[in-house]
Length: 188
Image 1 (cartoon, rainbow, N blue to C red):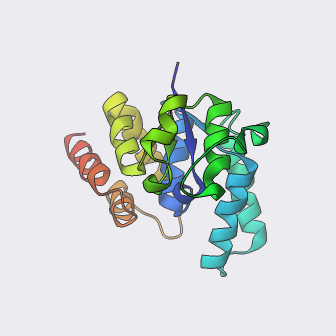
Image 2: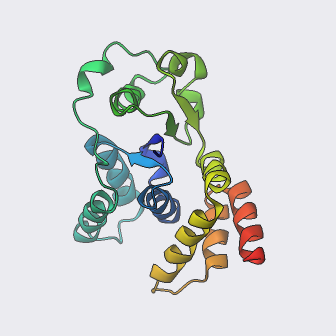
């Protein structure tokens, strides 16, 4: 059975990273989880940074995300928040949701807000999405490449090749993962 990961809001935007993370979960490599509150934060940030995107399109994307990954929404975690200690109290809901979901990993770019000492009692580790995708490639290289190929095939405006998607992932901070994906694409 795939291990459980909680995706923090900061990794669900930009779109290329979100798409790959959701496809990795949808492929069964991991069990991807998030909360309504994480989605609220994600889409609030997207709306602020991309005012050109209509509220209807954002609502559609949110709906498609929850449809794409079965049982992705974590609920009933709020009672755990008050007892948790993190550098940023606003992140306690993320750890609480990870605990409630039985997650082994929180995928986040905000690693300093999830220190090892605070997560260790719950057997949870914070991972940057670059490290997380590298781990996913180690677990199931063919499946991750298939996720990437499908991601590229789904892009129509403008159309993109898998190599172009890899470039976008690299530019979004997945530098080592992009290099590994490019190697695998060259072999395949």
